[in-house]
Image 1 (cartoon, rainbow, N blue to C red):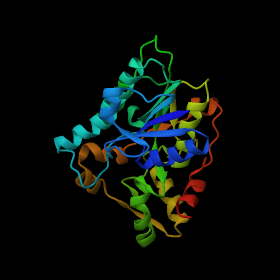
Image 2 (spheres, one colour):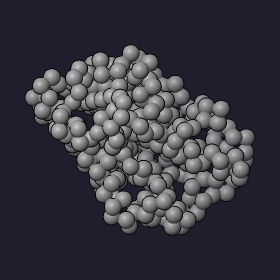
Image 3 (cartoon, rainbow, N blue to C red):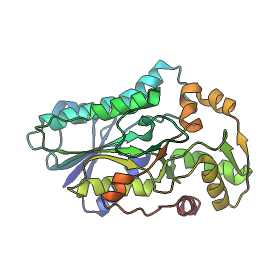
Image 4 (cartoon, rainbow, N blue to C red):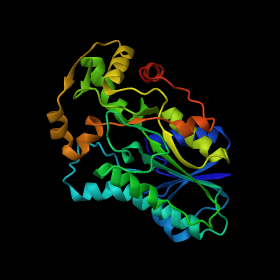
Length: 296
């Protein structure tokens, strides 16, 4: 039983590959370079899906908060879209053309599809996307993977929060800063921070592949709803460092540009209602448990 993973060499993809192999699956990775155990995106476009492909997963995506890239760089913006929307379209087309359809097609999206708010509470039942650039990106990202009604492949969309893991993402940047200088909240610290541990994300994707009753949208966030200031306190405590002060909003806007800075300066209160109802169990359900593992 083969699972085809777009973006399998990335932060989430590496963890997902490990979990899938531990569950007895063979894994084929789609990457830009051909190598043992992986194929290229152009090969998928040309030759379609590999034989005996039980499931297709797409976790590909250029890092939105790359401080070395400017949002004014058109090439970088195009890569953000292409790496999400373009790759999902390639996989959806390959599924539509496959003689033997995979059982499931699992794609990532982001909680940025929900409008930023300090008071609104979002579950998977919310269908009205935000009108900012992140909401538009997430909407197109999801639409790119749509399949016709006559294709029997089960479709799952996981709207991910901030993914926490010691070997990538936000924590890889924050951990040395927290350990040296202590923790600082971002802006007011009152913005919601929907989050999930990378191990739980890998397990959730695997659960979606294995569980025939799972379909549609799942919020890929932990059930512990916290604000940025609460995360800062928890992670600083796990690092055995104080939490004091804040990073001014103008600095974030200078570092990332006004559009991308909104990713961390604004937030959404997102609940994993359908995820919990599906029977999925979290390993790291609280921010304290997650932070302890992140610094272990």
